Amino acid sequence: MNKADISDDTPEGQPLYAHLEVVVDYLIANGNSLAHTYRWGSNREGYFCHVLNSINFDGLVAAFNFPSSVVFGRERNVVYSKKTGCIIQTVANVV
Image: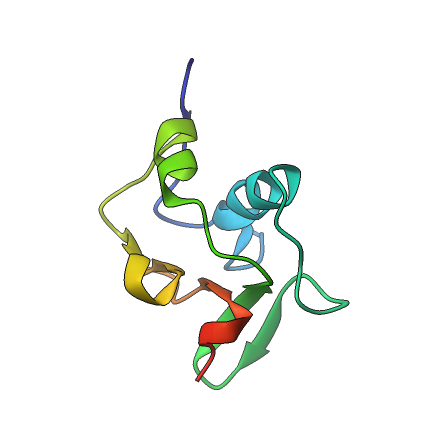
């Protein structure tokens, strides 16, 4: 299986979270659901995407090549981009 590359930054002219859209697509296609009627929200900390179920990190690693700037917080069910500040997170773990 060929892995897709995840960029460490967003393409020019796109929203800051654009480089993580394929990750959200993957999660939804593989049984997860959005926690809200909207896909991405924002607050003072940046953009966030909340999903309902636990994140399948093994599936993500099998499907994508992640740059070092995109990190996993497995214990908190978080995918975080250190460069853009965007986060994908299981809603049960939202503080």
